[in-house]
Length: 232
Image (cartoon, rainbow, N blue to C red; front, top):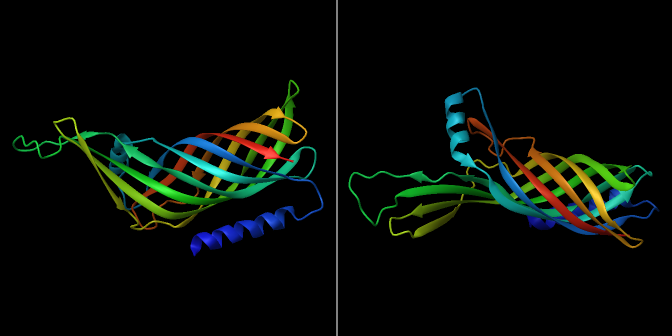
């Protein structure tokens, strides 16, 4: 029900933004990304705890895909919205486990992954310019984020060179609705009468912690390369 509500909200937002009698562009995009958490200590947390997690957590590879609607406002400015899905989170380093006596049934190392499944509604503005007659644009704005699922993966490694992955839902203290700020630099690599193909290095970061009450603030961020096509 919530996913349907988010979808109809996106349609309403798109209609509100683009319901003027001007041409607009529609298309799709996909973005392979690298994500992690920006960690900061709240008043009740020790900076040493933050450093411990910073030393042990690493990047996670994910992706995002979006339906895109872009509306030219002037020759230099365009507005953009749409509806999308992203998979992002963080990985951790493999850590050795020491037991009192060797036992092949017990793991010798373990690592953890936390994966977020998000629905996204962006409201973005583009400033278009040219460099050596090549069309570029700078993009910035806000992205509404709805986290509908978060899972944790515990990967256990054994002396036999095998591994076992245990997956569970991890929804404790998760902020379901968040906002991200987005910044990108794009280029139209193909620009024809009926369509254009673009690429865009992009950076997103949550404005609020993914946890509501935890002593450590975790704001998800990602770097990615958006590749997409827009039809006129």
